[in-house]
Image (cartoon, rainbow over all chains, first blue to last red; front, top):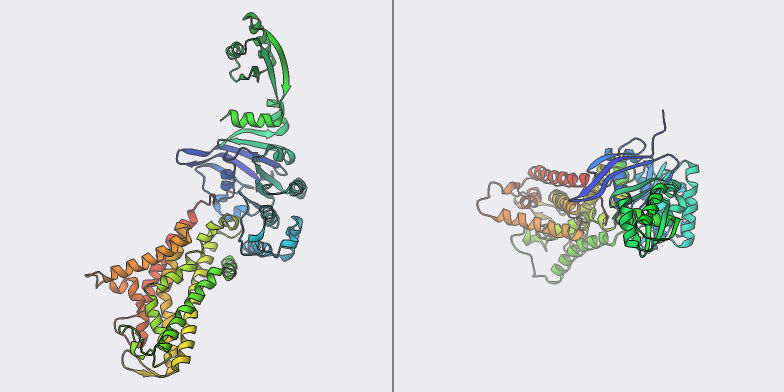
Length: 302
Length: 270
C-alpha cells in the first residue's frame, strides 16, 4: 500500500458572504516535505490552515490528513500538531503548566517529554514563569514546544518566526530543517519569501484565496524566472505591437518594456518593431529574483 | 476519562484566577455582612415575609436560610454567572480555543468538562455562603432550637442539618442559572454579556411569575423552585421533587442549546 499523504486538499472553498476567502485550493504535501504556504497577509493562508485543523467548517472541497478528514473529529489530528496565527496560552499559568494541560488533553502528560520540548526551544529556564510575562517570541517558542511534545508526523506552523529575534529565527530554521530526518513533514506558512526560501523546497503561493503557483522553487525560477527587457525608441508603440503579436502580459515599467514570452515571440516582435520603424536600443534577457516572481504572482494577479 | 482529565484542568485553571476567589469572597462577605449587621443592630431584624424571620436573631441556624431568600433576586444570578459566564468566553478572550481544540480531546469532552467545572464552582459558592453564615450566626446567637413553619420544634443540631439540606436543595435552581450563564458564555463569547444576560434572565422570570393569570404555570417557573427548600420546614405548596425535574428540564435545554452552538462553531481569529 502506498504511503498516505500528510496533506491532500482538493477544491477547498471557504466563503464569508460574497467573499471567497479560499477559492478552489488544491494542495499536496508529500511525506518528508518542508512545504511552504506563501502569500501576502489576507491571502487566505490562515483560513486554509484553520480548515486543515478542523477549526472552521469549509464550504466545499475535501481535506485529508494522512487519509482522514479533520471534520470527523480530533482523531484525524492524531499525528498532527501545530498552530494557526500566533500560538495562544493561558496567561495565568506557567509555561510548563500550559504544556502539562495540553499534554493532559493529549491523553496524559509525560513530564520528561514536556521538559525535553521546553529545552529544545530554549525555554526550560523560564518554564516556571507565567506565560503572561512572556514576550511574543517566547510564546512562539512555547507554541513550537507544545507542538513537538505531541511527536507529530505533520507539523503545521503559521508564521512561526513572528516575534523571534535573529538568533531565534536561525534556531527555528535549524530545527525545522532537521525535522524531515525525524520523519516529520512540515507545512510552513509565511508571508515572508526569504523565510520560506530558506527552509522550503516546495511551495504554494496563495493570492486572493487562490493558488497562484504550486511546485518546487527551482521550477518556479525555471518557469517564470526570466523575462526580456526591451528599450525601444517609442515604448508605447512597442507595447501596442507586443500585444498585437500575442504577448498580452507585456508591460511598461517607465521606459522599459518587459516581456514574459518564448524567444520565437520575441524574435517576431523585434522584426515587427523594425517594420514599424521603432528602433530597439537594447534587448536583453534578465534573470528575475524570487522576490520579483513572488510580487509578480501576488501583486500583478490582484 | 478525557472528560475527567479536562475537568481536573478546568478546576486548576479556576484555582489560578482572581475572578474565582473574588466570587467566593463576595459570597463570604455577603453572609458576613448579614451576621455583623444583625449582631450590631439588635433591633434591625429582616422583612417578616422571609420564612422564620422572627427567629433570625434567636437561633444561629436561621440566618443561613434568610440569605437564601435574599440571594434569589440578584445575588444568585450574579455570583453563579461570575465563573459560568466566563468559562467559555475566556477561551475567546485568550484566543485559546484553537489551542485546546487541536489536541486529542474532542469538543464534547471539553464542553462537558467546562460545564462540570462551572457546576462545581456553584457548589463551592453555596458551601462558602453556608459555612460562613452558619458559623457566624451560631457564634452570634448559639445553636438553639427552632420552630419550623408547620409549628414543629426541632433542636439546634437538627435545625443546622435542615439548613444544610436547604442549601443542597437550593443548588437545583442555582444549577439553572449556572447553565444559562454557561449557554450565554458560549453564545455571546463575552463574560460581561453572559453575566448581564443571566441577571436579565432571572429578573425576567421573576417578572413573568408575577404576571396575573399565570397561577397554573407558576409552579413550573424558575422563581418557584428557589422556594423548594421551604418544604423541608413544612411549607405547603413547595416540592423538592417538582423542583428537581423542573430544574433538570431548564438545565437540559440550556446545555443542549449551548452544545449545539459549541459543536458547530467556527474558531476563527480573535
